[in-house]
Length: 139
Image (cartoon, rainbow, N blue to C red; front, side, top):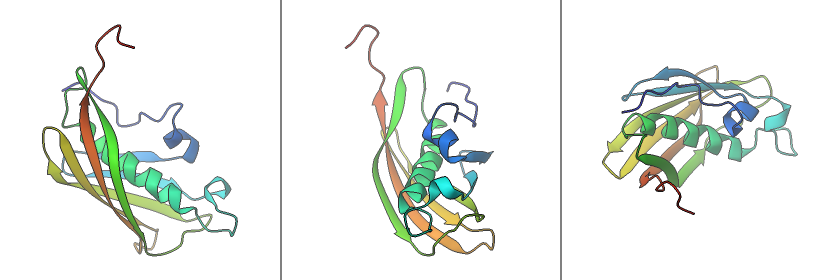
């Protein structure tokens, strides 16, 4: 496995949204984000798509630990979310991801996003595929 920094957010949507990784093991990945104006839909609530970005980010970070990054990449192929509670500016969200299945080609993660009161905001399941990196010179 290739060494990996769990803060790969430079110039990505993770950086744009302010997602920060705080725990990074094969058994558990945790990210946090404070909800701000940039995360809102027109009615003042956090946009549900932001929960999707957080969940897939957690699953992707976790999945990187199970692959050889010199020959493989990971891609999200399915994301299921249940929005349980709204989030508002000032809320600090914590996303906790745990692998349900870690195979050679498919990984499945369960991700739960909580607010600072430890109340469930979103429950997600994300499926990640392991794909070969393109050969050098491939178009």
